[in-house]
Image (cartoon, rainbow, N blue to C red; front, side, top):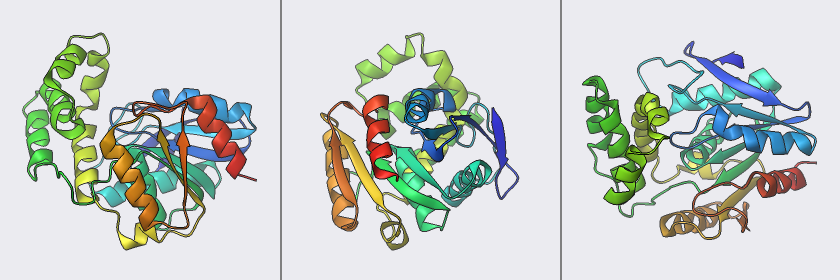
Length: 258
């Protein structure tokens, strides 16, 4: 793992696979660089450099208070600089919100790929105190409860599914990421509708969604495409249920980067 240093001094860990044009992968909630490796590997097989990184407060990256979405945008810009900016960015879920924010903030992004960003555009907002309740659980030494609260209220999973995850072998790996759920909640609440600077980003942009995926995400993608008329909207049938198919997604990215 390599490291970049963000504007506030936070060390951001990333893994680079391949030697071609860089494509930085910004994952969603509970995602670490490890989760991005299959896509990074698929990109490398097509002659690109896949770069999977740990967002702030995750796995190989540090954390510096206070949190603000713009700090995460600076983290992404630092990774781009470290791998030889300008570069392309593929953001998935909240990582797509982050990628578009970074683009609006002037990060050195040449091509933007936005996979199922959970913009709400004013519909069905999450409770205003949600990030504070998550932080209170983390501060009280109850990260397991923060994880399940995020899954229930932030993601909208039914109680039965939340309990199945809690009793599954993957749950212990989610608990160390509890602080990052606070940051995801803040990011998606403050940017539940993209700003004019975000939708006005001038680099080529592709908006992606799988088939099928959750209705909220279908609406979000369609609304974002309306707000960004120059962007291309692509349905990736190999990706479904808010997942990313590495091979199909890598081929699409490769076809859009000269």
